[in-house]
Length: 84
Image (cartoon, rainbow, N blue to C red; front, side, top):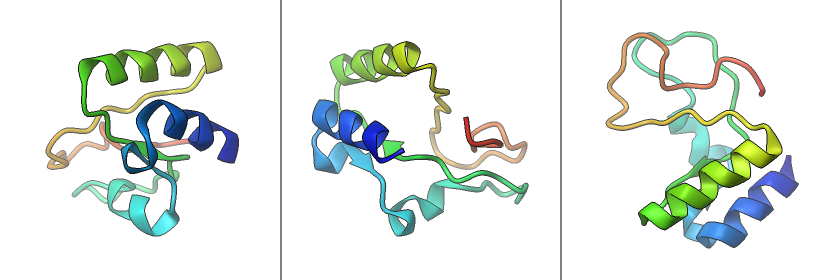
């Protein structure tokens, strides 16, 4: 799992990929408070080119991407529900 974060950090820089459990804790639930899985990391792309690079890497590596906007959802749609 650390290899995934390293690869994404190489694409985005250290500020663009959070992998510290304390940093990603805020991204592991929504207001519905479903039981969720912790994501491997949280990516925060700054450009559309970075978004494209993330999608290409995830597709090649068969990783799920869960987009998250304002983090105001109530249905569990923006949190990881399994460890894939």
